[in-house]
Length: 348
Ligand code: DCP
Ligand code: CA
Image 1 (cartoon, helix red, strand yellow):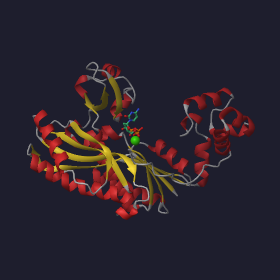
Image 2 (spheres, protein in one colour; image 1 turned 30 degrees about the vertical axis):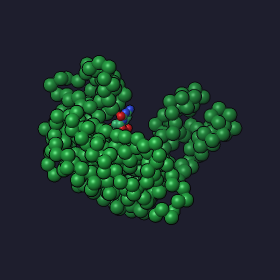
Image 3 (tube, protein in one colour; image 1 turned 45 degrees about the vertical axis):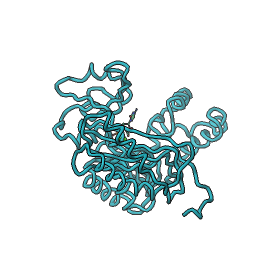
């Protein structure tokens, strides 16, 4: 069976758990562009906000018109914090499932014999481990699992067998199928196809001519009840970062550097294992007001996992402390801009 795990209203739920006093409020997480105070778009919103029509991608100014000020909180995105949570969830899933692939910051595809029992175990472990709820779809195909998860949100679990999967997918509107974009859906509607089961009426040659060979064949298979298999491949990682919380808030450069060295070791192990060299190194600082700041530097020549960076780290930390008056709560280190160390296995 395939499992699709999708975190519920992820960025907004992440904000809820670190600010329990916000319980019951409308939480709108925003990407501020900085042009004017309200420039930018909504990244995501919790369910009370969805109920009054606020959604991802909506201009912040529109959301402000809908949100009652006394019950609403607008917060800036804190990607480092969400990435840290995502990393912990990934570890929880991989610890319990041999075949797992992360599909986005808050979605995973898993192939596992455990089916429903495994899904319950994962929901519980994620709740215990990071305090977040998710929805899991379980089905004989990865497509069925993903669509089941979308249907069962929030905090849901929907298990489909071969028959119910087919009924469910065939009865779905084509625009609800992952992989069918708005343009394709409109073109299908145009020729009288509303639901997946209607695709069967279309000639496969016509499908290939209209949508191209590959997409045409995929649509034809979909209409015929063939939903594919496999959890896909891991996306190539573009950076490695490790973030951690300091024992106490501080402005002491030595304490910050000591924590960084600890985190750095893990990131370096990853670089060594993956045979990557990097051209940028960055340090992440989360200050007492929960804002995230980064300082980074680039190198003309790629560096390997084993090269010392003491001086560079000191320079970045001092620069940061001289520019920012607040205490630091969390720090992280990031290596990016990778090059493969192809074949140079002797190095290791
Ligand atoms: N996101 C974003 N802008 C978008 C869509 C999403 O910044 N237009 C971010 C915020 C989301 C996260 O990506 O929390 C995950 O996206 P999802 O589409 O999975 O949406 P949510 O997790 O917020 O909601 P749901 O419970 O419907 O999955
Ligand atoms: Ca989600």
